[in-house]
Length: 461
Image (cartoon, rainbow, N blue to C red; front, side):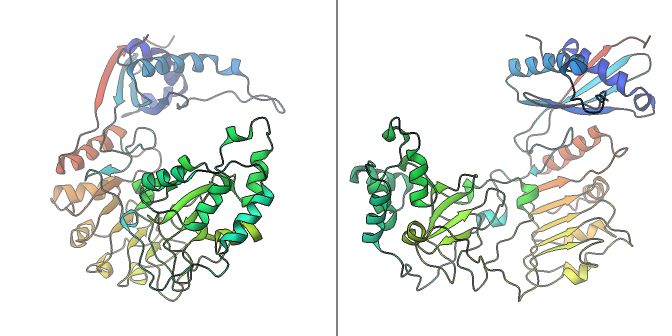
């Protein structure tokens, strides 16, 4: 097996990169960067376009396939999933290949650039720490009817094998929560195991139609708490939890009272909600979208309602009477930091900006501001960030980070950080890695590793 840190392993890839980037590599500071993974890769090479009406052929990329396969074999041998790289190749053929390793303190990024830096081990963004608010007086919906629920289910799925009391008790012990009565009735009628239906391949579909969703077996039930809905820091830190006063469902990442028991067939989870919103009912049925990080929608006010009347998306509820807790200042949204500032502001994102750089003075002292992301070049004075004492996530361009580092003004309240890099012809990827390692060192976190391989490709003939 080829070795990952052997120059010969990479030589075919380097020859392809040189052939496709002769001019840019010959320029001062010229380099190319990319990534190769176990099942995919990203290389800055030009491919031939097929004639109109014809699909690309494998033969057109045979050299690229072979070169990449050699590296993928080395990855498999090393037990690695992927590797990023930066290559510098001089006109005389001398090549320096920088392999950029990983760190347990860094999320995966794009190409050679690191993702978010995890400065505090096991820390999660504030929305992922939020627990449900108590709702005094929350009760079951009037539609709950255990007898009707059982009778309807037995009529629709005759011959189904139900769960035993021992199986129900074991499930409660595993989950650490008592199953609501409606859910117990459902599983006493059918335990939703495929093997119970034998050769009846349409039975599962009939069962789904009977219940209103694809039903999970008892051993697949789980609690949809925040940990069950993981999200990268760069996205999670810009989310916020706000539950409207008229909401049936609490706007949470997850809840210890959300018991997932099914799926809508498209990856969205169906759950019983034991921690409803201000206008909800205990035991209501909700759906958690796989395309969203926060919140859920009401499907039915009870399991009886779901089975008897079918699913119906309900009003989630949005607070429109207060300024947004997530504010975006850019050429298309808010026109100033002042317009974003209010006591409840949690997230300030400054995007593409075509006017004078902005001051952060209007948001200094705001009690709940925890996330700041700023597009490179948009801040008038990056040192104002030192006065934002409650930040847990900060995303800045390399120059802004340099100012903070040189002034020893990086906020110590941070749990995670990111370096925002845009466009071609910017900072050398290795300088971004070095900057990331400076930030990691402030928290004594494991650095991003680098390995240099050198060799000679010969002069282009």
